Each structure stands twice: as C-alpha cells, then as structure tokens.
Length: 489
Image (cartoon, rainbow, N blue to C red):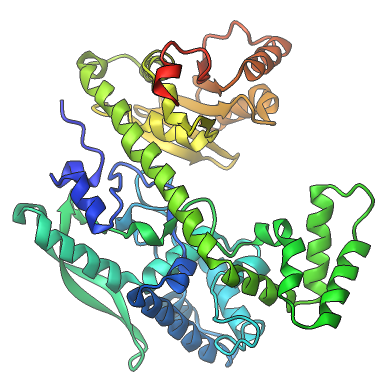
C-alpha cells in the first residue's frame, strides 16, 4: 500500500533533488506550521530577495498614498488588502488540509488606518535602515505572523510561481505538470489592479502546487515581533544615539516596575514605555536589523528541526503504516475506529522508537500540534469524515470523526505539562460533546517524564477518571526505552 504524503512522493522526485534546489519538501496532506518571514528577504545577501523586499515596500507605499485620502470603499479594501490565502504552498496554520482563512477585514482596516497615520512616514524612516511590515504586529492587536506571511506570500507570488515552474519543467515528468492560469500574480501600478498569468506547474488532485525556498521560511514567529520587545528590552536602549532619550526611557521603565517584578509586570512596563515613547518601536526594529545575522541562523535551525520532525521522522511513522494493511479494513463505528488509530499511534511511540519523533538533540519538543499532525497521518483509507479543530461556537475541538449526524467521535490531545489539563478533563470535553450532539469522545494525554506521569495520575484520581476507558496515556519518555541509548535521541 503506497501512502503518498510529501511533494516528492506525489511527484516521483528524489527528495535530494528538492534539497539541492533549495525547496522544502512540503506535505500535501496537511499544512505545516512554517511561514515566510519578510525580514529574511530584507536581510538576505541575495539580490533577488532584496528586490522582493523592495517590491513589498513599493506596494505598501502605494497603499500609504491611497490611505492619505482617509476612507476607502469596500470594493478597494477587498481588492488591495483582503487577500485570500495562497493555499498551494501548503504552509500556515490550517488545521485540516490547506485551506486557511487568508487576510480578513480586521487586518485590512488595521493596515489601512495605520498607513494613514502611524505609518504615514512609511518609506522615509529616520531611525531604521528600512521599512518593515511587521511593525503592524507590534502596534495592533489581532495582527499576527499568519497575516504577515499571507500578505508577503501574495506580494512575492510571481517569484514563487516562477521558482516552481523552473523546477517543474526541469525535474518533473510532463504528465505531472499542467499549464495553469493563475490569478493575482502581480500588481499593475498603472491600472491599479492585480494581473493574471500562465505557468507550467506541478498539478495534482485538481490543483497546482507551489514550492518555497527553505531560506525564507521560519517557524514560531517573525524576527520582528511583539514578544521580543519585552525579552530584549534591556538591550534595545543601546541602539538609541540620543543620550537624553535613552536615559528617559530607562528611567521611565524602571520607575514603572514594582519590586520583585514578574514577567507580566515587565510586559506591562514595556507597554507603558511604548505608549509614552512611540519612537521606541523604531529603535527596537533598529536593534533587530543590527542583529539580522541571528535571524537567519535562528530560522535555519527552526526549519532544520521542522524538516527533521515533519518530514524525516514522520516518514518513519508512515513506513509503519504501510505494514498495517489490516489496519484500514474496518467497518466499526467512529469511536472504535478513532480509538484503534490512537492505540496504533501509542504503540508506535512507546514500542517502535516513535518517541524519537518528539525529540531534537535529546531535548523534548513538547507541542500538542505535533501530536495532532501525527494522528492525522493515520487517517488513510477511511470511510469516515475527519475534520481537525472543529468549532461549534464553544471553542475548538482537535478532531471530529463522523459518519453522518448519528455517529460522531471527538478526539482531544493534551500534554501532561499543560497547566489547564485538569480544567479540560473536568469540563471542556463535556461541553464539546454537547455542542456536537454526541456522547463519544477520546482524550489523549502524552507525558515526557516520571513527574509528568505522576501529575496526570493525580489529576485523574482527583476527578475519579483513573479507570475511564476513553482516556489514553502515551509514554514519550526517552529514559525508559530499550533503544534510547543506541538511538541517541
């Protein structure tokens, strides 16, 4: 049984050829949580990337000039700001498949309003070396890394299409490519509209696929982000040339801190600094520019770890799936089917060195989303409908497996280290069951140490759930497996 998951599987190309080309071997089953960071374009020594960043700034200057007029019509707001996600690159934060939400009205209005006032000098900065779209994440709530990445992807769409076409024409069999008419390829500044184009691209399941260079990808957050303002605060004033301003900022910050300040207190104090001294944001960005080489090193490491986890180690899991031919021949209900796949995954992790998937250089990578992605790979050849992160108005549930309205099972994944574990087991799943009109659910909890195992059992005993048949514990420890020393996990 052939289980195709990655680009190299579907398009019959050696993964090493993709690596030599510089492209990431994406999963065509589910989005991977990576995204394009525009700072990597700005900071690159590749002229092609620098031109791409300049192109982003050119479009933002166009929007800035249009924003000076104030109000904008809904039609132009949609045309110039509200871009649908370019799902064909298979990156992002979609929990099921590759269909993300794209750039909505909140982002559009936030960018338009800020280009009209706070960003009115966009392109004419006096403190930083360049303009940066990521500044919007710092000063506006509800604008995050996914918004910045979606916007960037649209503005370099033509480059990605050409990059993919070159690979497809050179390395893929003709039967696996197709001439495709693509909308929104590049912006025409004369007509002020987005133009279409035609490209020969990898084509499968009724759609084309885009490749993305590894060296413009990152994970977790953009290099310029709100969190690092707090983390790096003590280093940022060193970038301020004005002695008086530097002293004022430091004095204001420390005067706002209580004794024995917590992390929350520091964050609040930094927010007060930004409010009192708005130019501090530009000095933070200057600090980030001066440390740009760290952005590249950090992203390389994050993407390398992602490739190890989501490609190399997941492929080992897929190899085990191939051997389980009877695993897919099932006509049982959704609860038993879902449970059988949970148990299979549990056995792989505990008895077939699958725990190594969750380690990098001996350090545990504790992320619920990685466990969820791994579980998604078990759902091949099933008659059931499998949806990830379904939201029925009372919060999202990780998976809903259904066969019509009368047979539904919910699956929730948690780490034993999750601070909200007890609350979730006590209330959350019951609420989900009611919202989804089912009484069938499975709770999967993974632990990485003896202390985490004891914590879980303590919680289960307190809630009188220690004998519950729908709670599954997965042991991902690397200090109690026979092959741990050999694996060097």
